[in-house]
Length: 128
Picture (tube, rainbow, N blue to C red):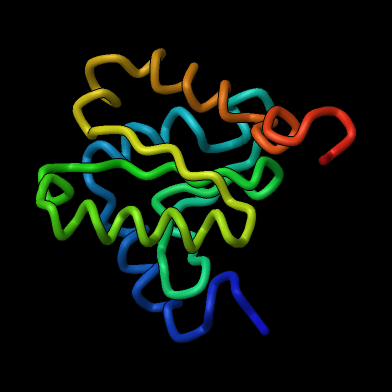
């Protein structure tokens, strides 16, 4: 069963990549080209039917940027369901409000770096 980048989402992923929000565009300038500790990030990568803003496959880490559309109770419930789905497949989700990408970019990058190695931190050195 294919889980990543389903063909039926290809056109939509491409559309999203070509029309990044200002916050996504700003964060992409800081992540692209393996700039952050040599980790490769992909933008608008899909897992199942969910399209992630950014995904670092080697760290099994998703980065999601939230604007005001995520403030409603319905949106928050959807975000929680999405996070549970991704966690089921071993992907940790970090969420940041759009404004922090502009106001505190170094803090956002530091939080992302702290997310590196989350599986080892969770399970310890033996992997359990």
